[in-house]
Image (cartoon, rainbow over all chains, first blue to last red; front, side, top):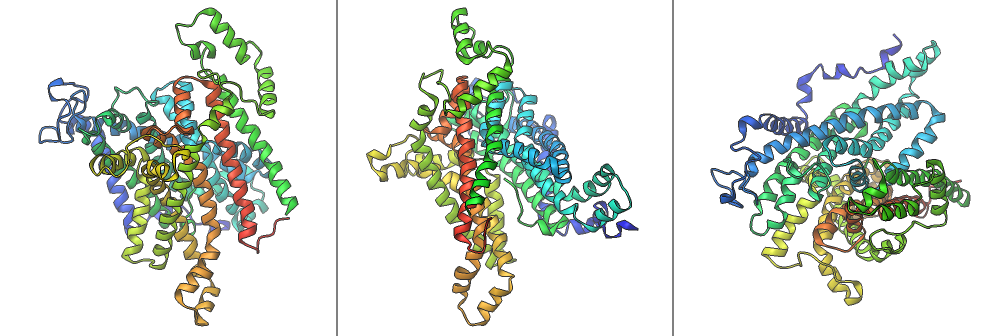
Length: 290
Length: 314
């Protein structure tokens, strides 16, 4: 009865048809699903063993046998790109979950408990002052270039911006009438946070998550490209492009194709996030944290 | 105004303390003995002990932290292990390319971003808007290293319009410097224009729906005049904020682009210092870039007062 004003997050999904009226959601989701499936089905779709090196066919141009050509070691770029997608999606997804979780937690605390706000926000400001790529490189260099460490480093990089967005949403919600109403009937702070504020913050949390997913995929590729991410023999989009760099004049396909695939994936995620934002919360149109 | 300034500068102190703390953690989080890690497995015991003493690793951690802050306070960032130069000097020697790259990139990013943002807002809902919006998402999705390499292949290798790598310092002529910085600046400028374009579009849309715009049109002002004199002037604040954030983040982009174009700037220094395990230098660069970022944002906030007389801080 008190909650009549409260819009339930899940009820908005009841008209699934409505979701797909937003073309960007459909296109973005289709792109991401397609590429995700392609990388999950890499063992079926790949035409060669991604690790098999055949020196006789080094740097050969794209052909019917090798769709994306071969690299300097004679490995099939197409198959490596498929397998590389697994690592990119895994990294992006994990970073989204971890930084989303801690960002939401910190955002809720900072937005609701005004006394902790100053301390938490200054700490986050401190972290955000570092250029993201330098912080990520330094952290992976210190922790060691393993996949788990790359994920930890990227999560540390993206948690502050996630927390900032959630906090700004919580600040608005805590002033609404339904929160005031639950306070007046004696609801505990924890109940208000988890039963009222959190469910009403889902929209920005998910939208922010899709952006972080996208940025994490790019940053992971940049780390692998610079040679500070996961070890180079593991196929990653950034790693493949990095191996093609010395040969870019004679074999530009080593850089071109994995790059296009990475761009499509990130484009899909960003497009999906934009559509979702417009659909879930038109007020947030155009808002996007760095 | 003065009160506001003092308040803002005081608020910097906790942020800078945190920034310093993160820099401190970096060296002290290294698993095992940092001195051994820095010098590598071939170092003699003497060398390791000497470096341990130099870095203060023999002290308990709380003392190390106190000494660290004390040194920071005096502006002493220590010495680079690789070049033995004072860290600040090593950074300032590499400042010119990065500074110029940042300025050129910001000019390009603003030119593309603000123009496309305004056009998209004016043609809202049309195919022009959709193309501009799609283009800006595309810009957000391109890894800067990929774009650099593609531009190198097209404009450096095939067309031979621009050099593929290297840097000519300012003292050898501005045009030559500009020539070497063209491709890296276009890369970063394009990537960062996406963000500025989005903010410009949404900010313009908001202003255009205000009553005073209708009034200005109703009293017979030309369309162009309304856009430039009324709409853009009021939409400029979020755009400036966004440009400030972009400026701070350009150093991030510089790491990748400087490495690819072999520009001897701070970004390249940062990467090489990390790869060489030159931790004092790495710490120094991290702190330097973070402080620059914080100061740029402070400047932007102060700039507000001059751009918008309605804002009064007190």
